[in-house]
Amino acid sequence: MIKNNTLIININNDNYNKIIKKTRRYIKLCDKKNLKFKYETDLNNEELKDIEKAINIKDKKERIEFIYDKICLDLDKKINTNYCEFENDICIKYRYKNSNHKNGCCECKGRGKCKYLIGSTCTMKTCMACKLFTCKTLRKKGIKHNINDYIIGKYFFTRKQKDILRYSFWTPKEIVIDRLLKNEYVKP
Ligand code: SF4
Ligand code: SF4
Image (cartoon, rainbow, N blue to C red; front, side):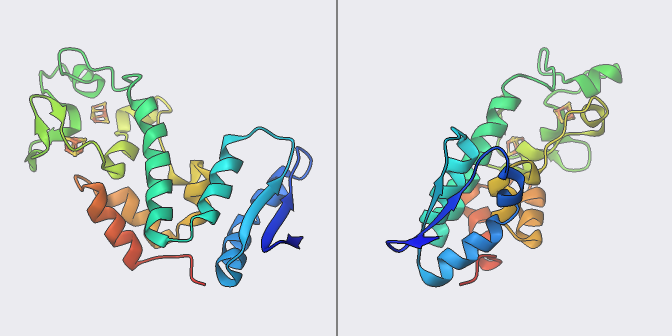
């Protein structure tokens, strides 16, 4: 239903999956007709609030930044649980190998040490690809991340943009956002 220049979509537990799958359609429609977007719902659901907010940000750069920051915030929370099991700067992968290699995958043989790693700490902190990455050791333990795990990641980015996010390692947010904008998905 469109009312007062706003696309209003009813969502509840029964139709949740069906409605969520239409997210891309709502983005396109709201962008094309310059509509606001609102869910009519009793659900107190953070993901719905994020979709609403993202669609209502009409500036493309601001929208992408909002989504990028949201996903990174969640990934940071997970990373802060120390699932890499760092002890004295040696992660689980290298402990399994009885190696004393420090700094996990922020430092490796061919590539050397990442320039942003200073004193065993990442000084950049904004690279989504680094946050999304988990090595084979972690994946075997079931620890893995995917942009599609996030509804705002799944429906607001194209396949190409998802690849940019996945593979832009050691790259500050500003540069990644620029790359995303040049391959933008949400075309009015
Ligand atoms: S992702 Fe794997 S290699 Fe990289 S720090 Fe974590 S456990 Fe170590
Ligand atoms: S940018 Fe990535 S590779 Fe470099 S220190 Fe930070 S997390 Fe490690």
